[in-house]
Amino acid sequence: MMAKITYKSSIPNDKPLWLLKLQLSVSQLDATGLKGNEQDFRNLKSFIDAEIRSLMEKGDIRRSFVETELRQDEGRTVIHIFRNHMIVQTYYIEA
Image (cartoon, helix red, strand yellow):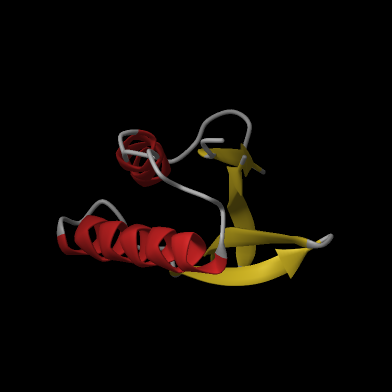
């Protein structure tokens, strides 16, 4: 069974450009071999953190404080992306 990376956004319309760029980068990841285990989530979080750092260095993220957090949400492991302490997107790895 192959898992896939999905997300839910709390900004349905008018997403900031940096978030769209981040979504694109994540969507291009090769999800082959993902099982949705803790290691997969740690690897995905590391990738997302590196992409956010890159977007900051390029100036795509300027006035926002963006961070990620790996947590349990309703019994599922998820990665939350926060902008200025508000959740803007949640990533899942689903089998």
